[in-house]
Length: 126
Image 1 (cartoon, helix red, strand yellow):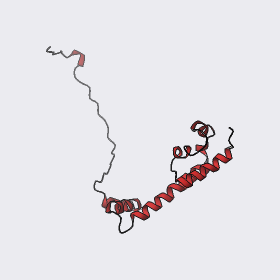
Image 2 (cartoon, helix red, strand yellow):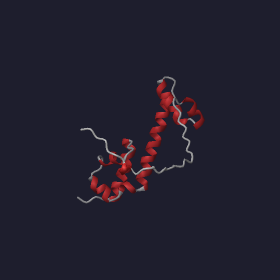
Image 3 (cartoon, helix red, strand yellow):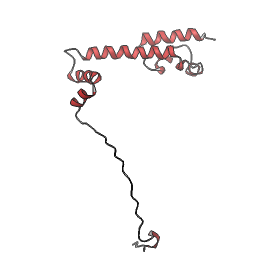
């Protein structure tokens, strides 16, 4: 059966919105075409589909953060919401472990040995 590519694109957008899909693989199972056809038509590269997925992600994150900020939310969720919204200095203050990386210009010094390692006697006990 031949499918109309534009119709499939519209179905993708509908599926993303209805099922709140955040990944390409979630969309494919709801379509009448196979996975190879989806990728052969390069639907995963279309900006309309990418934009719909991105909008769904933004909407879901907004819902989650809104729920996490409620007074009756668990403290863990409230802290997670704060961490998502905090600036760097606020985040540093509530982070348990802080890692500061300082890279200095370190020069490696190689010294030549006085003797050749091949000249050294071999001591083996078997």
